[in-house]
Image (cartoon, rainbow, N blue to C red):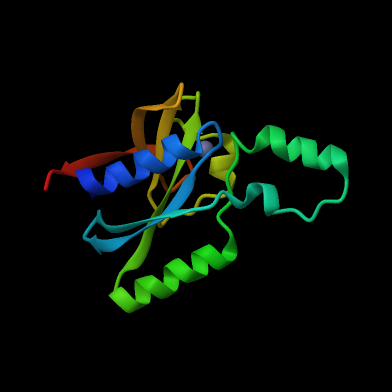
Length: 156
Ligand SMILES: [Zn+2]
């Protein structure tokens, strides 16, 4: 059971993570599932919609969102819809969602757990001082706990 990703695809994720720092970046992974391996074919960086995910007119909530945008991410439904559509066009499926942890280890948070689904891979990039320092990928087991997933990097 592994996620297979190319060095070029990883660079897209790393660049996105460093550009968005100190906020959390996120995005969709399109690819193919063969047996238990998920092979990434296309990386789609998306906007972290967390700040726009609530309709707010209350300043205290706005401040709360400003504080939490580096620890939470939400991919907007329209971005997921676009990714699904692109996947259909290319005969690919959504195989996972990546996001970054600014100045924090690449370990899933309780928030990550609460929005995860068993069928997807969840690569997390740790970005320390605006530089990518670690990558780990996670999948849910049958008990709903995150387990590390092997990452196979293809150079081409
Ligand atoms: Zn997270």
